[in-house]
Image 1 (tube, rainbow, N blue to C red):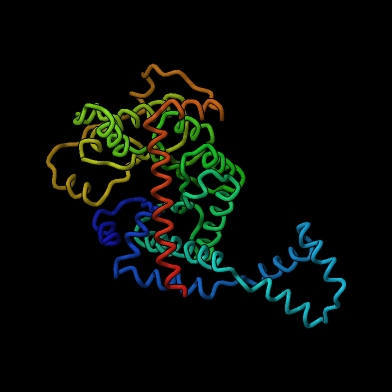
Image 2: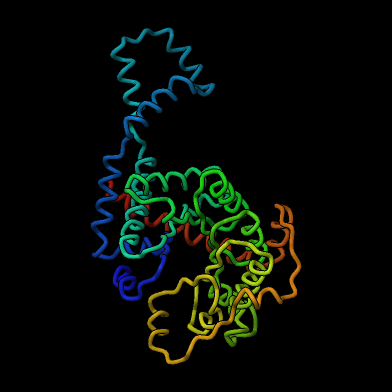
Length: 351
């Protein structure tokens, strides 16, 4: 279904997330990709270069506990054969957790590769939502994804690393962009504060959500219906777009998470929009002519003040936005839960 829809509508780029991968992993047509990932996990090892690196690390990097253990080991003399065996065991034996992690990563890479065989542009690959508050681990996971794609002959220019728009995620993206030339897509973005922080970090692209913002207002206020231009999600993305264009930020605004075609038409002119096959079908069958709603010329005329964003300002502004706080935490939990479900599926196959 995913591949057929992309071939039919010919999008420039495509995106993935744990929920989409979990759904696809249950479809018969994608079982070959899952099987390949599982086989990779079962055979997971290291290259000769990595084996050498691991051996050198064992020689030079010891914890205090290992130093104490090594001291105790001096009491007992090992033969050369025993030393070699211990070294080889350390290089080749992966824990179940490491093997499962390698399999999960492989699933995302294989699905990403499949998508890139169809779309001419880029695919977004999402870092595990459970790392949303760990800058260092997010950077490590992103770099691992890029390395895995490059081994498949896919340039990092065709990959966008998706990170949740937490402070830690945004700072991870800043470092990935500036120090490693890795392009990032900041997702689960529901507030103006998140958007400003992303722009100042110099990220390649943001995915501000539209429909999920509408969902919150429908569930938590008395108003249940909105005209497209009054839709809270549309208002949010419009403000972000205008701010970026007025102050010359290069970060691309890609509206996401739509509930109806009215939201899409109200954002015509936005840099990019990520639209589901169902809504693309509705748009293609419609007769209404699209007219530009967002443009740089319009944005330049907006009365907006520039904000200097630091961590304390970010956290305070996000804290004061109940909708954004609720939806960000909910989104992280949802993606994390689906990642756990996918792990459970893969773990059963690895045994």
